[in-house]
Image (cartoon, rainbow, N blue to C red; front, top):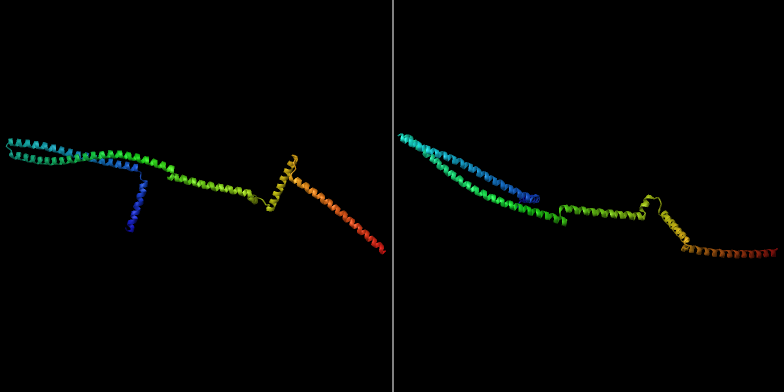
Length: 280
């Protein structure tokens, strides 16, 4: 198979596939039915024309038969008048007319046969058309039922064109929803970490930590106040008391050390005074 032949075959195949998809069987059946009815009408018209032609020949035959009778009467009258020559002419015309009548009869018989054949074919075609009409309506009903069933099946299974579009729309909506949910979670995470505050505030990390500590101290102070109002001591108060006792003990110890230091200094001064007196 040559290149052109293969290309032609491929093109025809593609065109047939397109036409098959675009073809509506119901419309095709209706078109075929109308074509058959047109053919039946043509046959009926042909029979009518043939009958008209036969009737014309029959009229012409009757006129010739009348002429034959006329020429026969003329011949008889001519013989009675001893005019054999006129009788001979009348008989010759009679013979000519009779020959024409025979020819017309043959043509009329042929037309009659043709008419009978056409009528028979017309009846056969009409019967076929009636059968086709019944089959056509049956096929159309089957096709419409199959088409409706196919649409329902496509809708249920989601394989149809429209359902495919719906499925793709749902898929795109799910993707967008997932994206927006992820974005919202990311925004919440950035909000929790203070990323947005960083962008809007001029404080550095040390300032933020100090602010957090100050906030914690304020909370603890308010908690201690509430516990004090309720007559409860907090761990912090106990620690403070312990620290105060430790400070008092340290103060007493320092005082003792200072007294001892003062005593040591006076003793030294006394000894120095004695040394000075001895030298004097």
